[in-house]
Length: 200
DNA sequence: CGACTTTGACCTGCGC
DNA sequence: GCGCAGGTCAAAGTCG
Image (cartoon, rainbow, N blue to C red):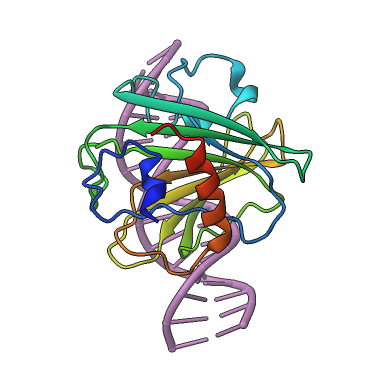
């Protein structure tokens, strides 16, 4: 499990973070880990990428960016597998308990772009939806989820691209402070593949 | 009945 | 200051 974390230059205390992601259905063949690109938000190319890349960073977030792209091909399937690792780090690590009204502390975010028919990809953790918002320049709403594990403050956002509605973008914020609640062999397999092509 | 979703209101940051 | 957009809260509703 820990291997997944290696994919990200996590700035958190990172002692027990488990990042796992998997698809227990089987309808996607590609996963993209998106970058919180430092491109200016005014870059009119909104239709080209999810706006969430700049979200929260308010375009001034250049603390640290890490992006890595991997591309593989399966002989069995004609579809390619593309993985883009993206990390938006505040360098401050993950701390819970930020209340509204307090100073904003930027958390690192990891964006996953997944080609899937369903919005909700089961990553093995249990999530509770706490909001949904319409996003500008996107006909699909963005959904907000929080990990239901007590004390775990991990959040994620799920959004579908207007440009390509087959693509679902999931943005994780924070690191789980507990083990995964359900085994996920399938995704682990994907992770293994990713590791092969990861220079970390 | 507990866990989860829905949804409008509210809060906050940012640009003008 | 105002309006917009993103993010969160919380009451009500739904489901197993």
